[in-house]
Length: 207
Image 1 (cartoon, helix red, strand yellow):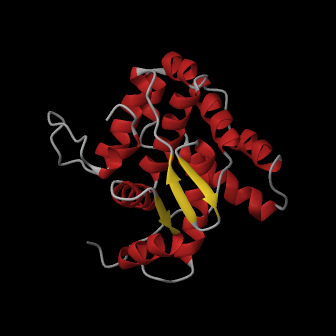
Image 2 (image 1 turned 135 degrees about the vertical axis):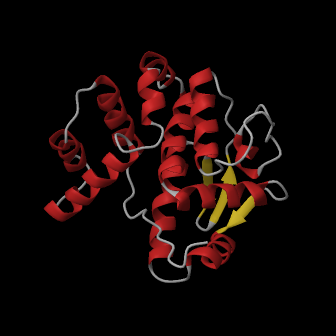
């Protein structure tokens, strides 16, 4: 483990913006100016908009999954029309880009295996073991968790409580994006073996 672990996730992006940005990137019709226009529909102030543009770019054209999604553009654009597949693709983008998002996603999957709800205090306690307990931790949690909720893979029945929302992949590309997000953070694992018991896969209905 590195002596210095950076969280990296500093800005929450509405899923509608992420989907529009991804569509533009896949179509080759995007620019920072376009991302700024998207950001301006949700946020005010040059600094906030600039931060949002950076985050949108990180999640789309700078994402580890973007080559895969570009190679399968037509399938991805079709899959985005399906609610479950859209949930998996957008969640996979978040997970693949930020290790913090992967860690919190996997941590929740672990506890959802034994209980129906997970509370914020437990998430904070466990995540602080790796990322420390400074102000960046709750800020990043307040970015990651709402994005997963809006994507449709988590549910918050009341403040401080989280529940799983299992998803059944409808297309091969949505499932492959989810798999690639997992292997991005586990590059030494054999792709020939099943990992259905891993907490990461707790979110799939088929498992």
